[in-house]
Length: 100
Image 1 (cartoon, rainbow, N blue to C red):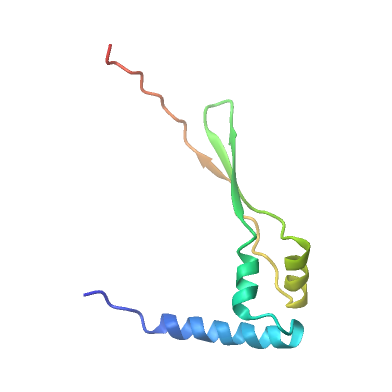
Image 2: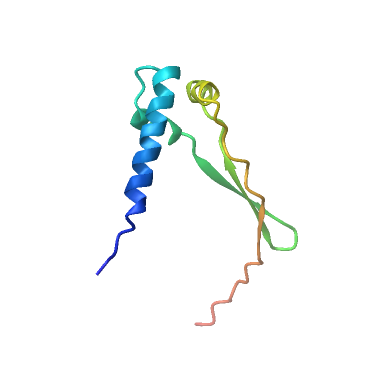
């Protein structure tokens, strides 16, 4: 039987109510759900850079929010998290096809 953590719905509700209260004073008419939908428009992309040694540097980066979302974040005194550190993927070893 799958057990549900009773704290998760409570925490989600508390975050929803807190966001709704902050939006009420700073962005009247904007619901917490609509605000979260706007945040979903900020994608994270992975940039893969090959190195001369055969490894690959992976840079995960948040794109810059559009003007409307940037204004909302500023009004709510929120910032995006810092960009993650680059990762180094090991060499990709190619195995030759021996079925000749």
